Amino acid sequence: MTVPYLQIDGIRKLYGDVVATDRVDLTIAEGEFMTFLGPSGSGKSTTLYILAGFQDPTAGDIRLRGQSILNTPSHKRNIGMVFQRYTLFPHLSVGENVAFPLRVRRMGSTEIAERVKRALALVRLEGFEDRMPANMSGGQQQRVALARALVYDPPVLLMDEPLSALDKKLREEIQFEIRRIHQETGVTILYVTHDQEEALRLSDRIAIFNKGRIEQVGTGPELYAEPATRFVADFIGDSAFLPGELSDVAGQRTGLRFPDGTRVAAVPLHGQGRAGAKADLMLRPERIELDRAPGPDGATLPVTVEDLTFLGNNTTVSARTAWGAPLTVRLNFGHPLTGQLARGSHLHIRWAPEAAHAFLRE
Image (tube, rainbow, N blue to C red; front, side, top):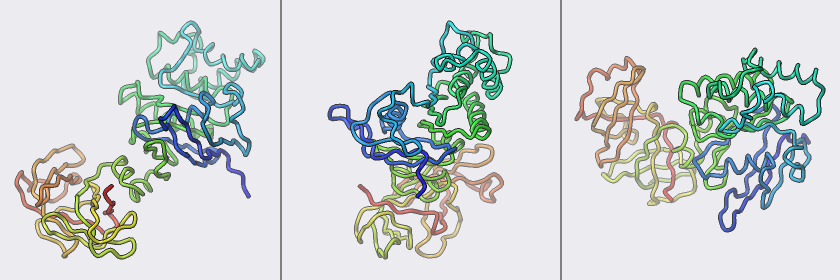
């Protein structure tokens, strides 16, 4: 039996009566880029800090290469860490900042110089050794922090919202650099963010956190196309949720009846429900088709256009169903209907069976 590279096993963290994490289980492969994604207070940073050794769990274990690291002090875990606010020493030069963890490990001056030079080249800051942090941009400072975390070749690199203080353009630039560095070094990265686009751009897999637990783990396409829960469906990508009730339940497929009496058939059902149970139909904007004529019975709904927004590569159509539920349709540039639509247009929406999901209402 192969021993997992990094195993998070039943981690639970309490602050008095407050549950920060609740039985978090996760296996990370060597060299994987794993992102913890979720809203504020969902437990993702707490889990990361327990991994780093900055906090002790109330219960559970963390094993690296099969060995528990919980009793190992944070400074001896040999795990790299990059924070949101850089945490550079302002009185030290760039080279001295990067060299700091090597000096703590009492490496020789020649090896330190070679490693610092290599780490700065990796983050594309060659020649910045003598620059002071105060004379650098936020993006450059974060690159220095990344070089400092990587300079001693840690087996695992932890990153806690490292780009949230940067503007959008710079954030996207550093995202590209982080992805490149991961591919070049093969270091195992655990990355915390609340930005779904950032998670989708960077990650091999994503763990979706909610209320201290992991709701689903998967690749970006898996989470987007096959969300396991309503929370995941709502958190990843844009969605419309149309309220209705179950009818004709058959295994993991169901019909749905809406408030105006309209019905749709053969929708994938998440969870166990019976006819009459309240549920919501989830539809993605780009997987909805617009047409002037209704489609086959059970696979179409009438809508009225309320607004149109041209966004260059697509046009966003804001519409409402016959009973007043809002939804959005995204039409690619050049779609034949784009120039024909206007506020008040009466149309029909349709979708492929696998493009919709029914979630029981809590």
